[in-house]
Length: 112
Length: 473
Image (cartoon, rainbow over all chains, first blue to last red; front, side, top):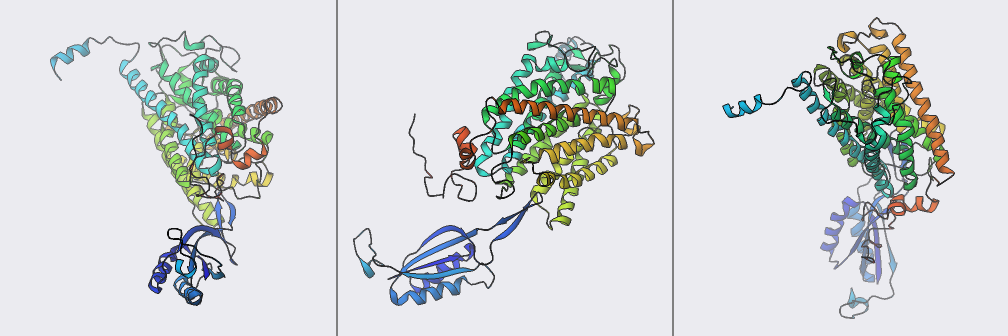
């Protein structure tokens, strides 16, 4: 099993969610986060004083998937989230040792 | 109207003097007093939105505590120190009117019931103190602010209000009804405060006593207090600009009472002051935005709010002595000037957090001195022309003496008060309290439960500890 994690532009979340559901992903977790990549945020000006806003709002999306689906899920997310402009975010996956469905106690792939 | 009602009205006894005028004046000044009071909650929001989320309640509380403290002191001795008859020094009144116990609700001066004047002037004292608080955001102990409030209004505001607003002994049969700064014509020269009654400087609604006074005090207090932790390094951006805009709207609305009410008469001069206040503020809003567009590339919301307040400050001393076109010139210039002046703190390294100096001191000085150029007999009816209207420089000289006297007095006295407090009860919160947030450390409250990190909140995220657990009764 693998955990696919994506950090995305907030306004692309709906597109990504729709694409993932179409692919057949059963569940996902999202959280509001802040961060920056190579573009290093943006600047704002208040009463002539310039502030660098390094961390910009992003959405973090996490999906647990079977090993065989991981690469496809990453592609689905990357395709749906892409705008071509800076700040589109990243998608990656990490190995997961154990998953338990809390309600039933099912383990492993059964719990996905 | 029924004959019965007409009969009732006919029974009303004639009050002293011209009754219709006295009633009209009193109605307008009582309404204006309520308008001026509204400026202080407006200021609380204007300032409160400009702080970081972790210190907005403290900012708002400094304004509301001013209402509490100054109102009580005003009745006990404040009004008396500012307005009791002073036939010699012109520096301050005396204690003969303490507790207002010699005031009759029936007494009238210059076609205005005295109690309306007492209410009106109280509101000026409240907002002047509250204005200072913008310079000390995020870091001043609330107990020190309370102590400062009591001492400052007593030794600085009440005497300076006497200099500028105490007209002196009325000429009992005065026929002239010029009002405001011109009202001096209705009083015996040399019997009131030295600026209004002896020097003859024109300050219609308080450019000196309110704005220069508060601006100079803010500078002195923030110098003694020191800079905020992270000043010049961390981003200290406003946390709630819509709140700033609400506050600006309340200030602008209330300012009509402040300026047009300062005629102390319900007449055409009040109308002129009203129109001048509106156009100068509008022009200053445009002026500030113009500077921003040229300098920073964008028109900002905070710039619109700041420009409006700068215009209100600038026109305050001049609203009854310049023409509407003069007011546009004055407003446009003061808006542009203040947009540049707010950079002073970064250049000189004093942490005037919310730009009390850049807006109120600079704007107050500009407006007070501009009278020397822009005053015109055609509107003010008190026979003074500025340099641009063929007058000589004598009025400008008087304006400068008044402006710099108030600035110097306020700065020196405030500096001494601040030092005295620093070495007794202490002025600043601890460094830890400042980082955690002064709302929590000084008031045991936070403004927003949802505030996340990088908003200056104490909570690491919306999820961590967002639901306070009740532990006491």
